[in-house]
Amino acid sequence: MTSRAKLRLKEKDMSERNIERNFNFHETNEDQSKRIQQVTSIAKIMASVIEENIPKNTRERALAITNLEQCKMWAVSAISKEHAYLLKEEQDKEKKIEQREEFRKNRKEKKIK
Image: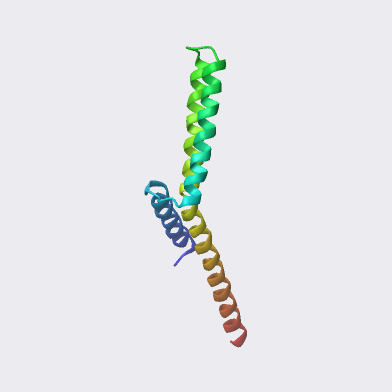
C-alpha cells in the first residue's frame, strides 16, 4: 500500500471516529453531571449579570448572551465527550506501541538479511 493510500485510509478512520464522537449521545456519569451543573450555574449567573447591566435591545447585549450560550454549550460538550477523548488517547497510545514494535521487528529482519 502506498503512503498516499495509507494517509487516505487514516483520514477516513479519523473522520469516522470524529463523526461517532461528535454526533452520538454521550451518557454522563455522576462526576460529569456535577461539573455540567456547575458550568450551567455559572453561565446562569453571568447571564443575569449581563441582563442587569447591559442596555436592552443592543447588538452587544445580544452578542454577549449568544456567546455565553455558545461557551456553555462547548463546555458541556467537552465534559460529556470526555470518555470518547480519553478512549481515543488510549487507542492512539496502543497504536504507537504497535508501530514501534513493528518498526523494531522490521529492523531486526533487515539486520538478519
